[in-house]
Image (cartoon, rainbow over the protein chains, first blue to last red):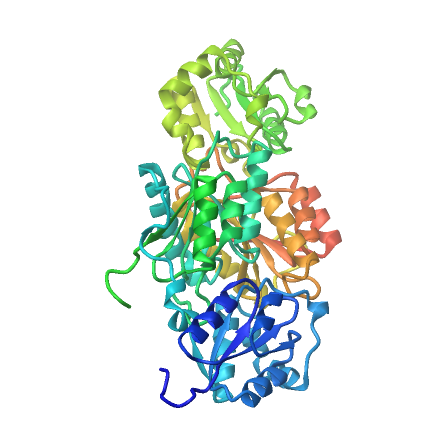
Amino acid sequence: MVSAERPAPLGVLAAGGRVPIMVADAAVRAGRPVFIVALRGLALPDVTRFPHLMVPIGMPGRVFNAFRGAGCREIVIVGSATRPRIRDIRLDFRALQLITRYARAMLGGDDKLLTWLVRLFEAEGFTVRGAHEIAPELLAPAGALGRHRPSALDEADIAIGIDYLATAGRFDIGQAVVVVNHCIVAVEAAEGTDLMLARVAELRAAGRLRLSGRAGVLVKTPKPAQDRRVDMPAIGSSTVAGAVRAELRGIAVAAGETLIADAAETAAAAERAGLFVTGIALKAGPA
Amino acid sequence: MVSAERPAPLGVLAAGGRVPIMVADAAVRAGRPVFIVALRGLALPDVTRFPHLMVPIGMPGRVFNAFRGAGCREIVIVGSATRPRIRDIRLDFRALQLITRYARAMLGGDDKLLTWLVRLFEAEGFTVRGAHEIAPELLAPAGALGRHRPSALDEADIAIGIDYLATAGRFDIGQAVVVVNHCIVAVEAAEGTDLMLARVAELRAAGRLRLSGRAGVLVKTPKPAQDRRVDMPAIGSSTVAGAVRAELRGIAVAAGETLIADAAETAAAAERAGLFVTGIALKAGPA
């Protein structure tokens, strides 16, 4: 991947969270220069450590031009993106062209939107790479991340969660559930994982979930049809914090198919809180 | 069903909402006396129009004795029951006996809990009847309840919701979803329909769901394995109010398998709000 000549810089379209920065760091470590187009309001200030351009959401013309100007041919689209408030979005001319052409695709679920985003970059001549191709060290390994391990009951809850997510995956909804004592108590859809965890915390505080002490598991897997290049599920220390507030016993993710932002920090937060974080091998062999 | 002699009174174990009262009224209209055991904190004050006893939640010994004392042999268990705060529950001796015997079943999902409740009454010698058997006029008819009708897009959203609920039903989670423009944006689990609708309203207010004007449908169906005698889904004017706050276009329920509390009032509220309420025939013939 790294040629003897100075390689073309990797383009990183950076949304929120630490993953974009970790991908950029991994590329630089591997000897490859990086150019970041950071989405204003989403990307962390830390992206300014790298050659970058801040661009408001809704300006694809500027994004394409910036990547081309920096000589990028390969692009990684990465980071968390709670959907922006529509009134905060200003559109450039290219966006308006694209919207009239692709309005249909943009009305679909997350999957459709992200698939459409990939096609858009490809139509502009870029190659879209997955964050995990650049930084495989971000992928959740199989097995427990730290000292804490799921109990037999937790394992049963995890199996239920995985079964549900595989079953419901074709509906292109969320990719996470909370399972407590064989019972699915929360399903993620448009609200995202953090708000779903907050809901579980509220239901417990209101006594609507009759549990004492730590109970239940957050299970998060990729949707079956998901394009791993753009929509790999991710967890991090904020996920751990949410799980602690929901008084869960742990977090289960798909090994090799989930990004862990700041694995060391995430593992330490889980260790301190007494929470397990475990990677489940969902596939028999490499896909 | 109504014998020439004075028939044994119908026992109604009344939880929240207007449905228990409507069932009692229907029985009385059909010439049958009624005795209500009303769950304190859940049942509406209006139940006191009928012979009744108020009983705190957690007192099955008192419930059985009251029904026996009133000469009831057939029981209807009906009404909405957001799970009570555990600290508000006092248990009688019978409850403690039952809990030690049935703790496992009680830890399961709603289905399991309600199935267990039916078995409990049956084990005590009662026959459990469905609210719809006593008051079939409460069942949602097929087709639109009022003047407003689903559009072609709404029909497509309804089909997605029904497909999802049939698929996910075996997991014993909620029985409702919100579908907007081919996309499932909220799935009900332990929080219940009202809180799910409130979440959609919040996501819209926060701009996290990019929609303008009325959009989307609440789809609510019975779970495939559900015991229709105790867990028939129900809607009412508060459901209409929630759908209006979530800026939905309408509500779709399973015709003949959904109770509508105060159909006239519910229909009027929907009419005023410009919302459709429609019954979908899910079955080819009678089950």
